[in-house]
Structure formats: structure tokens, C-alpha cells
Image 1: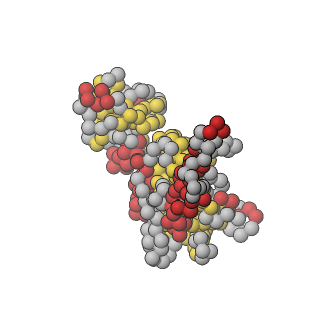
Image 2 (image 1 turned 90 degrees about the vertical axis):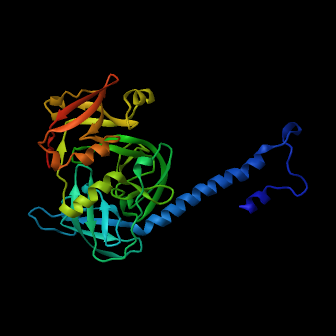
Image 3 (image 1 turned 135 degrees about the vertical axis):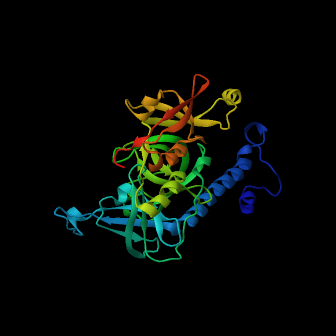
Length: 351
């Protein structure tokens, strides 16, 4: 970096005069700009170097009509991305990448390719776990998606259109978005980013400046530019162990659509709440458990079964098969007042 400074220095004078005899700030500003650009470049290259060994090209073979698979034409299938999260070969990808595949193949960045098998998938979150045989693989380090803030640098890695291990960089555009999966299900608390994604990026990692995975890339909106989305890694932390154990996730539902919401500090003090955020109810399905329990649009859910609900993923983690058809306690805020109610979750369609 010192050479950049010297390139713009004059041994006989520390400054140059601009028009009108005034010192010209352009030369002195340039080294600082270069330093910032170099720092940005280092952050991206170092993060890419950390995550690249864990990234996989996932190729899926689709069955032909009649149940048999052909490597060409109708049964050829497609490609996506994934990444190893354990040294013994477990990898995360998107559910829509592997659904319906007759066989799977995983390829490392060094070109080494080997068969993979589907361990389990969860269309509700568009997440799936696959496994390759062996041990000692370079596992990605997982971060904490709840700490993400708009404007934060993120880097996406994947295999767009089969171009293996492509790196793109951008920022977190927003958090807490809702996104409808290819199967028609609504996924809440999705990360929006402008790090470029293309077909084939699905299932690849979204990482922070330290190379820690904060999301699983899942979709982009075409023909828009810079509207790309990732499933938060905190959701994947909950989903992946259950897919490894059971191959699927059984869920219950309340019948609401929600969004993370900050609580007014005055309201937190007034009600002596132990949290500063909750889940804002955006809509209530007619005849649903939430409807029968009296929840309305605009309510803010803050507790479920005596557990604080600060984010939508907090609620997702609790809405398992254990509480299906069982009376549960829920607390919510309405017009500055706290209300307690009983609610009986029902089976989620498709579970």
C-alpha cells in the first residue's frame, strides 16, 4: 500500500496547487480511495477462498417417461449448487434442485466428481440435504443470519449455467422478506440481496465477509436485476438435522402470514417485555387455528408456549408435529395491550 502513496507524492512538495492557486485534494484523496477498494477486494477474495473448497456442482438425472432414465434429452435433468457443512459428506442444497432426481452427482471445484444420494428434503423451506461417501471434507463455517443488516457485504458462490464455482458480490438489500417457492409454498424471513444469481446458483452458499455461510441461495426474479433471495442459514440449522434424522419435516400451522417487526421502545417498557421484536400478522386464513383463536391482521405475536417469539424462525421451530392438534398458549399485542389466548395448531397441508 505504501507504493500507492509514493506514486502520488512529490519529494519536493506535499501538495499541488489546483486552479486559482489552491491545494488540489484530488491527488491526496486517490490513495485513500485505492486503499478502500483494496480492502473490499481483499474481503471478497479471502471470503471466496474460504468457501470455494466446500462448494459443489450438483447434477441431477431425471427419469424418462415410463420410469427409466436416459442421460440425454428428456431424462437429462439439470444442475444446481450445494455446499458441504460437515466433514463426513453432508451438504445443503435447494429442494427444487434435487426433487424428482433419479440419481445425483456432486463435483468439487478441482473437478473430482462422485455419486451423491438424497438424505431428505423440505419443500416448505426449499432446503435439502445430500450426502457423498467419505470423510475429511472441507466443511463450510456457518454464521448467524439474525445478525445480518441491510447494506452488509455478502458473497454468493455457485455454478450458474454450469460455470463452476462462480463468485459474485453485493449487499444485503433487506431481511425478513417472504418468497413463494417453486412448489407454491410461502417461505418467510428470506434474505434479499443484489449479489447476482443465475440458474445454477440455486443451493449455493451466501457468505459474509469472513466466509461464514449466512444463507442458501434460492431464487432470483426475472427479468428484474439485483432481486435475488437466500434462505437464512438459521432456518437451515434447524431443518438440516431433522432431515438427516427423519428425511422430512412434519409441521403444524397457525394459518397466518407474518413478518418480523420491531417493537416500539415505549411499548416494551410499558408492558415490561423481555424482547424488542415479534411477528407482525399480515393476514389470517379464514377458518384457520389463528382465526378461531381470535388473531387479526396487525396483531404482533410475541410468545408461543411460554417461549418468546422474536423472529419468524422462532415460530417455525415450535410449530412441529408435537404441538399438532394440541391446545397451546399464545401471547400477542393489539392496540398497545397484551392479550393471551389458546390456539390449536393443525397439520400443515403436505406434511
